[in-house]
Length: 323
Ligand SMILES: Nc1ncnc2c1ncn2[C@@H]1O[C@H](COP(=O)(O)OP(=O)(O)OP(=O)(O)O)[C@@H](O)[C@H]1O
Image (cartoon, rainbow, N blue to C red; front, side, top):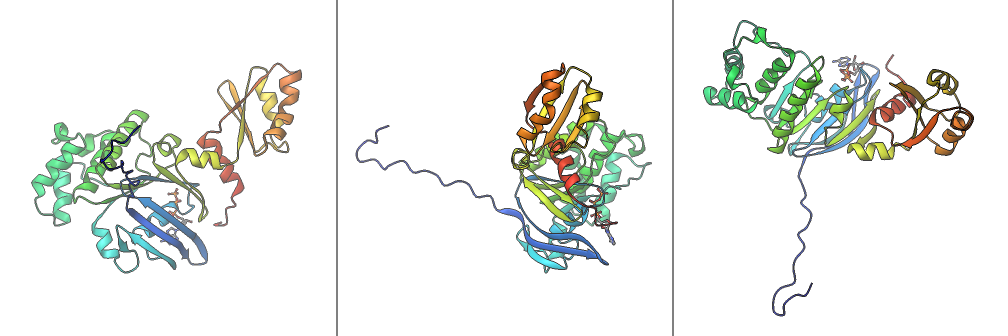
């Protein structure tokens, strides 16, 4: 391309730097002699959906609470929404919407009445406008008069989410928000979360579902207080160092039994008519599979590890020091 003489050379715009919604370093939390959060540092971009995964009771909820000043760390520092998590927790809390695992409604009140009740409880101004906005945002407007007790699991979760955004928070904390909800309702719930994030809301969500993890912009895997990996899903998978082979055809149950516990084979599991085999060294894996690929009638192909492969691998490598 030629630049006409006399005109200024085109300038290259610098990459957009998103301010961090959360930026914390070295967070530590103990309950009694149990080290529940061990030196965790995390940065979450504004408008990002950040997922927390890990075994039950391994510190996900505690970490999320520390990140936004709902709990005070024993060590560590940082900011949430630009405010110091130690000294400004009251200010942070006002800008946080928290959907706990146990949201409760008044079953005999309608959806709109439940939301109005929540708005009154929190002393919000412009209640009517806020309730109408939340109903509209979450596709609940047509159901506003339906009793909460009659709602299916998916709609109940939406009502819970509506209650969390009534005060127009900047940060949403969702603690396993779709546990027990069917796949279609879960997908719709996540569509809503993406719409909220697109409008600038930052979302921290804990989940045990792989498909939900894959819908997060970034994820963190926490096992027994330790942050084992974090980043965008593709980077977490690539950084795992795992190699995976798919075995099909032949007597898969026999292959599985032979490979379980075999040196170099970290994981082996049947998925329908295919066997997933993963390990840290591709050559060792191929050597373990050679008798089945060459002598047997199995087909062995290389594949990318899935997120589930990576998480099971991480879980196998971590030790439960909470017991
Ligand atoms: N207030 C508290 N006092 C004492 N122990 C606590 C407290 N809160 C959490 N714990 C303990 O800290 C550990 C981590 O709990 P946390 O709820 O953060 O885990 P989690 O990963 O969110 O679990 P889950 O997936 O089951 O929801 C658990 O052993 C739990 O029993």
